[in-house]
Length: 292
Image (cartoon, rainbow, N blue to C red):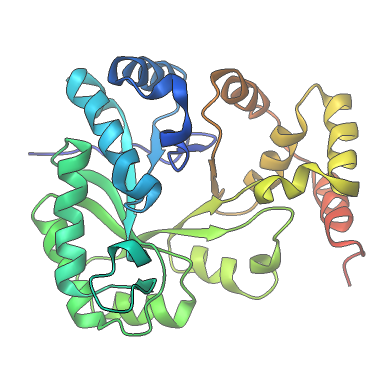
């Protein structure tokens, strides 16, 4: 079966981490309505991971897709594996750890497809770098899944260049996406070479915690965003996301809100293109000092 992967031209992706905590979306019919409304707005990317809600978020999303099968062909799915929580560690230690083994990755891909009720996800990412990773074995698991049509592309999250390049060198297919922590409150990747390496290696950047877990909207930075956003007819959060989208490579913010009105506001705000001087002014405010 041929699959057409949506382009990364949406203003942001919708993160499903908090889906299990949204009381209005626990019924499959209500969630299907919510998904359809987002698709009608042009928001096609939905970001999952197997640890979100201890797998419940993927399962709940899958129930909605099964109820309304026509939705699956309109959206793009991202999901991740690699983090083993203490309650899922089968050893005597009950220790949180990372697992990028061939067996774990292969099984995780099949399990995600089963929970989501689909035959294919567009992007499958390794959630955290694993110092014990065998690049050859992990790469083979990802390559085999791509060639079997189970995943459109493989990617990584939170990796450093040395780790992802070791994996990429062992694979037949390129790593196409990278989720990294990036926001006005966490701009370090822009200055330590990480972000340049991501886009230089041809990976689509996705910014998790694009509002810094709320840090962007508090303190002096929050006040400045509020003031500038009000002058421009935007929300403070919308201006913070515009700051991210101004970067080369146009990173895709992954927002955590599931509230329809807030999503609509951020979508309206996405029309705003940030000028260079404002971009640097916000950076200076966030860092507390001017650039060198």
